[in-house]
Length: 220
Image (cartoon, rainbow, N blue to C red):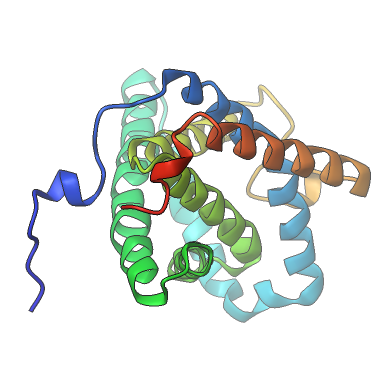
């Protein structure tokens, strides 16, 4: 029997932001991690992993495209609310606030817990072409949570990522740009770009970590 011995928001570490300076790193991390997302999706395609659930992936893309095809400011606002804000909040509560935290107590190893939760995060989405990319992104959110001990930071980062993706997709649907995020074949990332931006993203996460009191990291 599972019984919470503290308020739900306390258990999840949903508390006031302790470092507003750390917020500045979040959009930079989200932007610089994108070359990894595109390159790892290319790896998945080369390995043929995407073929495993190709029909399911196509169906999911059709549902997403149906949402994004809705026109007008109210519909765009609705898409951002549901697919960015609500998804960011609910998924981070589940995968980082509950699953990652539970796995950390089980494994007694935060890194194993972060990557295990990220793997579950990826698999549950049932979109195998982006499986490696989504696991990497889940790990980024996991480390933001572990280093800050505050679930709001990964929630904000997740919301930013989804929001940027939705805005870019809407711009593509309205012929404002030529980048189609649903077909990453149109985005070519060189190895030099991949290594440079991934290194920058890791450096930014390290700088994010330094914004918090390191002596408290092992006590959740």
